[in-house]
Length: 347
Image (tube, rainbow, N blue to C red):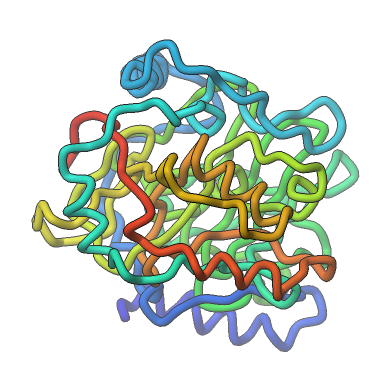
């Protein structure tokens, strides 16, 4: 464990004793520890505005499945949706070409390993809606050169993901922005975090190349979560997020960051997108789980962080049916295939 990570965890332990810091009920695996590499110096930049590079990356990424439809995004209150309809998170990739290394990537992650729904009544990655009434706070970052400086609209008692990742996800309904923090903790009146990113939900922007976010791959977290209200509504119109224990020193768009020192090409790169095979029979699953499996066929899931194999992220809710969720463990890695998403960036 590096000194920067240790300092954040020490601050987290201090925060546990503070009334102003309420930790949510998430779950992390041992493999996810130290998934953020030490940041290297990067040019100044911000995710607050679209750039020509963002547009080029978006066009290049979408070009891998021309003619396929898009989803509608996900309404979350006020007039905000989660990115434009043509954003990569909301694109139908059911007809996209299979990556030539698909079977290799699947074997590396584990073809016989069960899909693991990393959410339920007791755990998951929580989020909170905020508005103008929430005062914004400065945050001191370990990886400041790759973080958006903020300030961040952290409420008085934010739900924080349990475990080492300690994410805080804030959906600002007035600004239509996501504010996301990794390894967040409060000591006294000061907030600290490993890294942070601000996402304008009205634009198809990406992080600068080589930058992390609140997630190892440089992607936003909130758009990739399975959320109870979507399943109840009967449809998920976006891709999901998952983890794998072994990744390579590389990433594919729209990801912008790797979290590995290995150049083993049999390992998947950050940002690679998998989908559930069209031939997979979902008929025997609970109706609520068929909503999730249908989304995995149509929109797939992005590899977003190092962690346990095939762990799919979601938000906690006391309303989840844990028994129904556990049926997803009958799905295995071999039931997925990776799609072609472009060249791997290794710098």
